Image (cartoon, rainbow, N blue to C red; front, side, top):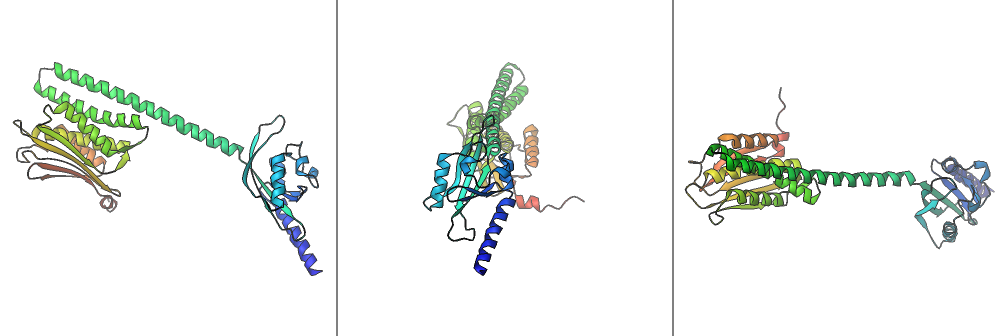
Length: 346
């Protein structure tokens, strides 16, 4: 008698859990007749709770739950020959939008070992799926728009660079011509990264590809004899945000221009090296040459130097200029630990 009472208590407990559940649940017999459903199920699918008890699953509502394939799977689950996990179905009701459902079912003990009971859980994922699709569409549209903007910016920069070059050809002053050439190369530095972004359609930039393209552009516009002067790029696999890459590219542009102007006078032959290495948040960008060295090279004067210093400050990095013997080495170094440990201003 005690075992029977315990069995009944366990069965009552199961029914109470199902009825009070915040999730849409159905407690079924092995022939898919409804024992009890949760209030959440009735609210979600607009079914009168008083009409469901004792009915077959296929009979509730206006017949929308009469799904032969689902019924077959449920009976197979009750027999132990199948399992329903995250099974997707469409709930179709007259005059209403089709709902996308995900169902899970398992055999559940109700306290009577001679009876088989099924617990069916139903989740309406229609809105979640719609939101996910909308989000994917927005991300795709944003990517297309960004790529188009970058493409237009790159084209505009090319036009500006062409105008600067045409102006340089027309002016009589050698000094003005030099300034226009420098401005042209600065614009081309930004255009190179914009072109890379437009082609790749991403917001991150591979510095090896970017610096190689940039150096080729600078060489094409400033080196007339490739057998005499060359620019060599050595960069690891670092990838940075586009705004960071633009600042680094402008630094490279200024330092390479400075080396081409001052390190190789009187048709002297030589090489300029661009190197970038990173480890974690730390990185070092260096531009070196094997020219005449610091004695005759004015590396700390002019607009270019001011641009490099401003960009380095913006990147929270330090600049060092050393004698490379032969030539000059300019390094821009960012150390995250040093920045993190700088005491706050009083």
